[in-house]
Length: 150
Image (cartoon, rainbow, N blue to C red; front, side):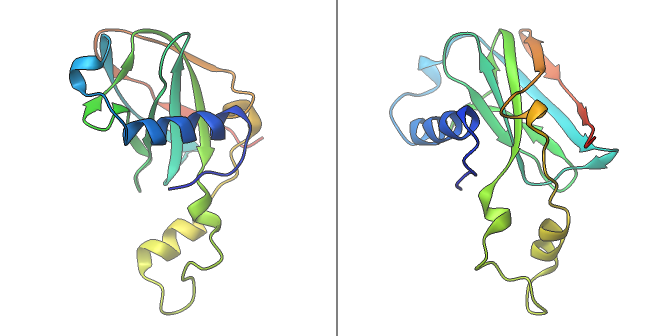
């Protein structure tokens, strides 16, 4: 999966993806809180958008929303969650939604047509200039984000 260039979000997500394939395992992780939630824009669930939680220090955690707008964060490939404490939240589109080679004609499957038609532009205040911040605690954390397009 690749991401649209949008400043620090794209750089951090690229760094995270590269590190997910690298060394380290669950034993290398700091104390983490499990994070899940739902992302909507103007009341409609957003599918296929990337969400990244960046702690004040350390590695960010990332997830991607499903068709219902639900996400779960991964710290590294086999470890779910993100570092405890304050985390800046960035939400952005993935490039695969803009792939001109993707099937969108009559032969395209229903899932591809739905993903293409549900693409939303995420305002900068939620990604490159994110105003979102959460405090992750030990255990289960649910952070739902109700974004507004205007």
